[in-house]
Length: 195
Image (cartoon, rainbow, N blue to C red; front, side, top):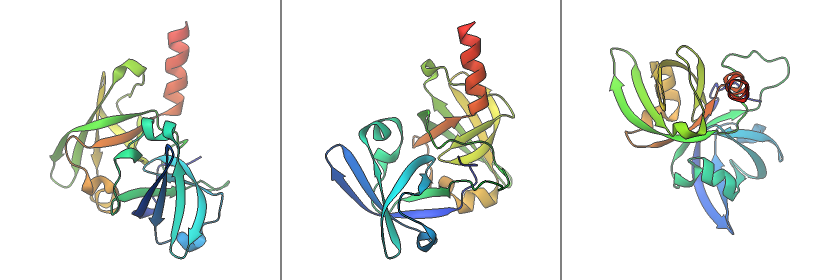
């Protein structure tokens, strides 16, 4: 389980294809604290550390993960948002995040406001995922509050701290992002559809 509070940025040093899988070698400031078999969210995707080499570590994404997330769009040199799993007893500063991306979306518009940025994101509504105004959503692993909500579209506002310390500063219009919808909302939506 994660909280959506980004702990740091990782830099993709190497991408190696093996069959349908991709191995990502990532460098980050807390590599020395990681352990083999540890779960770590990369742009909101929970991946397992399979190797550690000096200041870098390796994670593997299988074909299903690559098809459902934006990891397939990454290149060497790109930054990714990182978060280690929540420890029992930690504060839940963001919201309950599973590290399981529900679907990808596309940045439709970025509006620079007076002291913040508003990102409007479109997604395919046929998968029946929803947002609600003032509800929670995770974009590239970052826990955010929904500002505007419509069918297949929502907006979030980013404060300067989040902008500077996550990959939001790198996003451009038409970029693909990972979306994990609020787990409580998903259960309620499914119950509603079934009755």
